Length: 166
Image 1 (cartoon, helix red, strand yellow):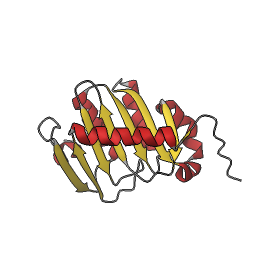
Image 2 (cartoon, one colour):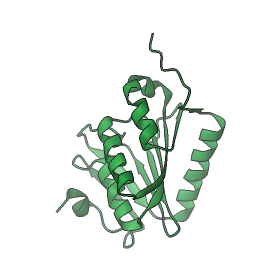
Image 3 (cartoon, one colour):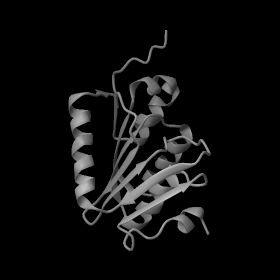
Image 4 (tube, one colour):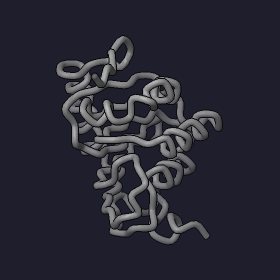
């Protein structure tokens, strides 16, 4: 049995749950949620991402579990991952760069609004991380509205940005 199934309960049974562990990766949590919600839109905020996370998201897209995906990442951290910018653009419909240290996953479709607030970046650190998962619509809507406000008022869209590191 996957570790995610031992640490987390079905979201239909647990509208609020949390974990503190070093064996669970964020993409496992996202897949766990999508397998319960079915195809959904996904909004992701992170400080930093990795090729491994992008590959797992790409796989979820190919399986048609992700209908639309938006990434909000940190501008400075993005400079460190310049070689991933093309891959980010292929996995996400939109990538926005801003001053960001938040780590949030928002998953929504006609039946579900799931929020994950986590300490984990989209990288594998194998360190103890903490996440809270909730299906409370008020929390989801608050964070989605604030996410939208940030990308609409104080972020840069990835397309057309020069990642010159000189």
